[in-house]
Amino acid sequence: MTNYVICGKNQFREREKLNRILDQVRVAKEDRIEIDASKGKTFKIEEVLIACGTMSLFQEDHRVVIVRDPWFIKAGEKGAPKVSEDARKHLVEALEGYLKDPNPGCTLIFYLDGSDVDTRRKEYKILEKYHVEKLACDLIKPWDFPDHITELLKNGGFVLDPEARREFDERVGTDEFQLHHAIEKLDLYGEKKYDADTIRRLIPEDMNLDMWKMGNAFLKGRISDVITSRNQMYANGMSAMDMIPLLSSQLRKAYDIRALRDLGYDNAAIAMRLRIKESAVRMNLKNLGGMRAGAILHRMTVLADVEQGIKTGKYEANPAFEAYLLKYGGHHV
Image 1 (cartoon, rainbow, N blue to C red):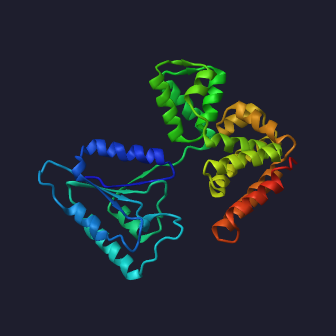
Image 2: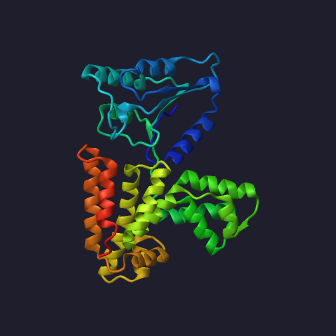
Image 3: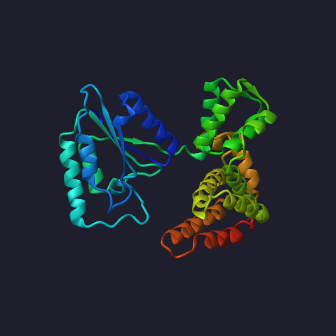
């Protein structure tokens, strides 16, 4: 029976993968065991091995053991538990001992909720050695998200007029949970054609809309709008470290567009090379005005330095991000 590692930043798809496996093996609730492996000192690998090795009372029944947030294969984990080399050696040996001869009546799943694996770790190399299947769930790139929305709407048979589609896109942002919840609402509402007013009533605005607004205002040099959007995101529970990678992604997209324009490519050629819509090219160029590619690249570099400084403890997150926005969010050229 196949064992799995489910990992990646796309939590929606991780959950989908897990549910699909559970549907396939059809385990009863009493034969589904979940173990919290996030803590180093309290977690014992023996707990996993005992759960995996225990045979069901009925031979035809199957067992699933889900190891949640296993710190020993997790990438980039801040404040990862400190364990001795002997403890880690014991964990590796115990894990290898089980995977050499696993219980055929058990599916073992290492579930990293929203995190990637660290492929350099000895523990992960053991999983690779014994063919534990890695199911990577990556985020959809922001510039690919409109096409993803189009695909899901088409699959559901939904038709949105242009204004309704703009409202829909703004409200779901680039959040897969929000997108699928929105699709479910359209399905439950029971219609196939939608106008903008109906979309506004059915689907609440998402905090990603404020991030999109902040990125556009930042590129336009409208500092008051930048601060307004930032404050709204703080109020919605987002932190500076949530906002930085999202803003960086918007800057990267704008840089790619401007750099190609500076090389002489027209809108259609830029859209084709970057695999985005021409409307996105036009909007970004309009937002950028006279800002050149070098200026955008400088903002990206400084933002990366700010993020790294926060991660290393050199800067406090909110003040550092605010200083960056104030310095660069009000200058268009």
